[in-house]
Length: 303
Image (cartoon, rainbow, N blue to C red; front, side, top):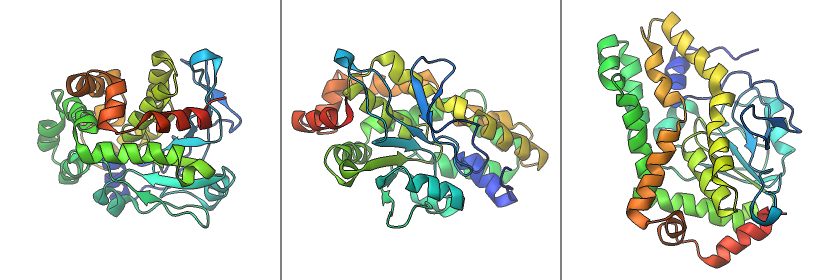
C-alpha cells in the first residue's frame, strides 16, 4: 500500500519529488523498458521508485557493462524495513548522496543497511528546492503561475543542468563519485549514488559514466529518459493530492520539474561543448579524470 502523505510531506514531495509511494511492479532479475531493447534491472522497493542497476548495456567491442557493481536511485530516506533488507542483499560498500542540506531537512537522512553511512556530496540545485517550497507553500495560484508557468519551470531546469557542467564544486563531486567507482570503497563492492528523484544529478552522472564506458548515445539517453517511466505513477499521485488538498489549483505546473527531458540533457551537453569542446575534454579537464582512472573504470565495469 502507498505510504500516507501528510500535509508537510506533500509539500516536501512536490518540492523534492521524493519517492515514498509503492514502486511499480518489476522483477529484480530484470525488466525491459518499453522503449529500449536493453534490459533495465529495476530494484522494486516500497520507499523508493527509481532504483536501478546501471549494468547490462552493450559497449564498444561487444563488451557489456557488468551488473551488480553500480546502482542509481532516488532518495532512500523513506525505505521500509523490508527495503533495507533488499539493499543489504546488493552488496553495497558505498552510498553517495547528492542532496543539498535543505532537501535533507525535509526528506531526512537515508535509511541504510547496518554498517553503511551515506557520503554527502551535495550538488547545487540552483535554489530549485527552496523556490518550489516557497511557491507550493504559499498556496497562491497567481504566485505559482508566476514562478512556474509560461515555460519558466523548464527554463529553471535547464539552468540547473548548465550548472552541472559550469560549477566547479559540482564537477568535483561528480568526479569524486567516478573515482570512487574506480578506486574507492565502492570499488571493493557495489556503489550506489542518488539525489532526491534519481533523475537529474543522478541521471547526469549515469549518462557520463555510460558514455565513458563506451555505451552508445542512444542507450545512454534511453537510460536517462527511463526515469519518466519509473516515476510516472508516483509523480501523478503527488499532483493529484496537491490539488485535492487545495495547495495547488494547477499542479501540472510541476510536470517540467518532475520529468526528465532531452532538452535538459542537451543543455548540459551544449555547456560541455561551450566550455570544453567535447565530452572527452570535459572528463579530462573539467572532471580531472586521467587515462589511468578511465582505464580502471573500464577494467572493473566491463565484461
